[in-house]
Length: 331
Ligand SMILES: Nc1ncnc2c1ncn2[C@@H]1O[C@H](COP(=O)(O)OP(=O)(O)OP(=O)(O)O)[C@@H](O)[C@H]1O
Image 1 (cartoon, rainbow, N blue to C red):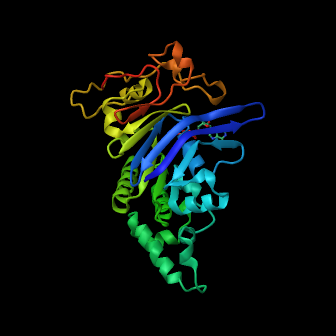
Image 2: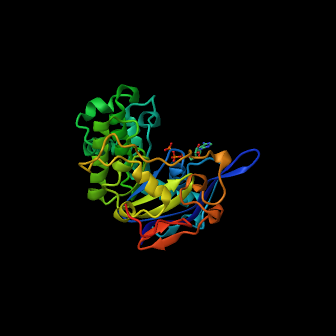
Image 3: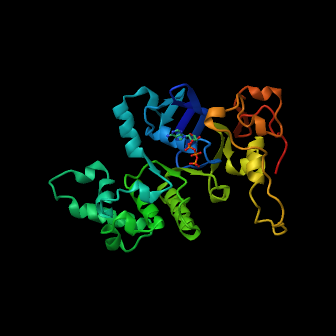
């Protein structure tokens, strides 16, 4: 059974004058326990997909999909209440600015206690208090925070971003979700702390078999440990597949450009003075989206046909949307 199976997901923003397709016809699926990287430039729609999945977009947004299956259940065909119940007990999300996500007026213990599953609060008022304290201590230890007392009594502004992010992860895993969405969890952190957070997420995936969608625009932070990667450009999910295949033989010109724009420090003969590859032009704004394939105006392979949206093609386990793919090319 697939953990997640999304077909033809469209996310539209309703403005006074028009409706803008911020995410267009995205297909996304993953298996139980899989780590899936969602990569793309800033503004490409990665966070919107995550937010649409957990249902936190407000009513200015219109979310539609032909299929929205989670653990075999069709989220499109159930009551809002049931959908919320399934999502809140099985999917957790960690955002990029941890300190802003925590309540500045409450101490860490009360915020962590609130994140525990409902059954921990059943019984007489204080019946489970000791148990809940133990659970919170255990969660902090799991994310590598040893001095639990100091942290419990602190308020978010008294802690570093790194510690706040670990607390957010501890709260996210309190309900032992089947899927953790990490939305650029290391962006606000310095490099040594971000390595710790990535190590922690890797171990949670291996020990708890917790599937993960890791959203990032930093390729190197994900390619070494993701089972699959999905590349987004300007609201279109243009290529996805097993990491090694996509890395060694990207099919979409944008995916190749993305890889070519990363310095290859593994290569001992790498010339640090060499210019990094870039595509001409810039990512268009939502108000000025090109028709068809949105990479069109910047694409080195663009031709007439690119003014229509390409169908998704499957080739040896890789999925891509391109009229002129790099078949046979390899990096
Ligand atoms: N609340 C909002 N109101 C208007 N436009 C929005 C809103 N949220 C997102 N957008 C627009 O939707 C597009 C996709 O945004 P999204 O946050 O999903 O991008 P992203 O790929 O996650 O980028 P980043 O890496 O910077 O977080 C962007 O053009 C963004 O400006």
